[in-house]
Image 1 (tube, rainbow, N blue to C red):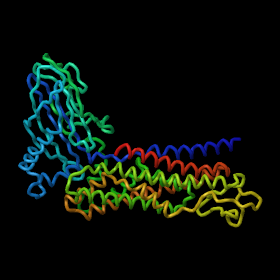
Image 2 (cartoon, rainbow, N blue to C red):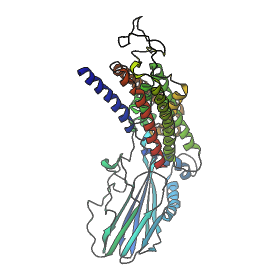
Image 3 (tube, helix red, strand yellow):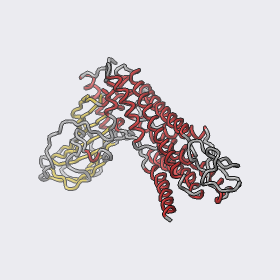
Length: 492
């Protein structure tokens, strides 16, 4: 009785792990792609002013830099920054819609400036500050909308407050900025950035309520929405003997990336457990996923650096997620159909074929032996015992590599772009190569641990229970593929 309970617990544990793993797969953070926006609306007697800020992360800054650098000398002078800000501010004003009681309020550019700040990997990030103003009635309902950079991800924030005799009666947005106008993002909101680009404000003459907190702006902080991997990106600046240490650190960062949230290791482990995989298959899949991951980084980096028209590279990720999901779903569904068909053809009473150790598999017509002895779980007859695990095909391994490795790491992309910017391309590629080796090593380790755990659990299961593992594996792959497909579809 106790043995049966233990086996049931082991089986439930396998099922729980297989079904839980897909739910932990999350998207890569895209903080290095963000274009963050803030609009601070101030209502005064006869005038409305909008303090508008655009905070551009490393990738959009790389894309815009050639447009700002008029003489192409690699430096953004004060004259170049001022000229670009003056040219850009009117375009931003066009993207802002402001109405009072249904009548459109024209906005004029009062001022515009561009600042350069240090980002990850030695790359720059840009901060554009502009002020717009327009006429305002003494009372009414103001409606504001920001349509700028609608195709870019990032923090969007709007505030509205009255001053000098104009009071805000009702507003859909707060009076003060929680990010201090994109200078100090709150830590508890970095994982889920604000996405507010509309405001409705009712106002009339009166004394404005005091704003919460001080009006002074805080010093900039390094915290930005969804930005990770700064330590890896910082390796680009290492020189001399520290370069060897940097390569070792890059290997470690790759391993950490592999064991973090993501669907690559989940797909690999789930497939190998249910398909009777061996250590060599774990090595093949882990290496292939790492190679595919590296290729996707290089491909996206090439596009970012060569496409002359600025586009939103982060919009590639939902499409890649969709394709990855479709591949995983097709793989899982195909395996599920095949294994369900094989289930009906087998005699449950005689199925006990599972790997006891590396290379120990039961053939369709004979029982496996160990050292010439019949395994302890074998029957004392000569009935044909069908194989539980079908052979692993190259097509399936290729599908796993593509589905698990086609989403490039944003931080690895930053490393590549930073290396190009400082003309250390070979060193940058070496860092990415070391990162990929660490990624592959961790994936192989995950795969081997999953196979060893499968062997331990399978050795304690009856034939009927063991046959559930391939079915659950196929169903989990299909479920993960469906989740990735749905997520990609909703984000497109």
